[in-house]
Image 1 (cartoon, rainbow, N blue to C red):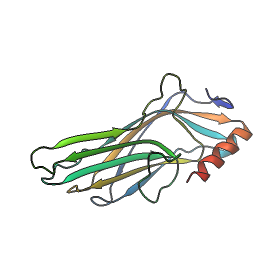
Image 2 (image 1 turned 90 degrees about the vertical axis):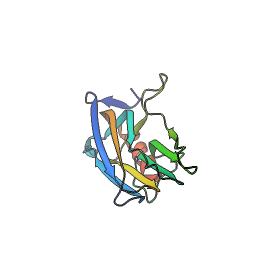
Image 3 (image 1 turned 120 degrees about the vertical axis):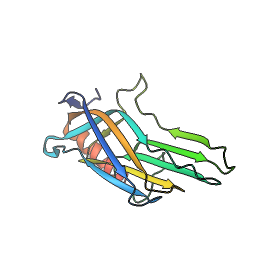
Amino acid sequence: MPTGLKQTSSLIVIGARVVESAANTFTQGRIDLQLNPLDNEVFVVVAVDLDPAFPDQTAGARAALSFAMTTTNQAAFPLFNSSNVIGQKIQVLDDTIPGTGTYMATGSLESPATSLDYLAIISTNDFFLQVQGANNAGAKAGNVKVYGYRARADSSVYAALVQSEVLSA
């Protein structure tokens, strides 16, 4: 348990989905955690399972699907090194030499290493999912399962967490 926090719930699993508004278009979804800011309530993320759709195989093209989860609203697909990115997965299907269909994937840490207690702490009321395809025939989607628990933070810890999260936007 992180210092300055007191766990107030058992493990919670949240499932969510975001679908591109049109093929190959950056789209973002907002997932409300319904935290109580009057009680300095936060959500401690202990694991994330990102499941983006598979990109289309298009002869002579490289198709991709990028999917991310962040603590703040994004204007464009976020870079992995941004402090507000909790998880990110990118899948690429390269068929620039027709018939080869080479598949590549990158992904972030989805559950903490044994030396870590958690992946992230969300101190504002929501988190965001971003999806964006490239060279796909139709709109693609991403699914996520977030595992965590509610906790109450000390006043000084809560203020620092909120300020850090808001300033990282």
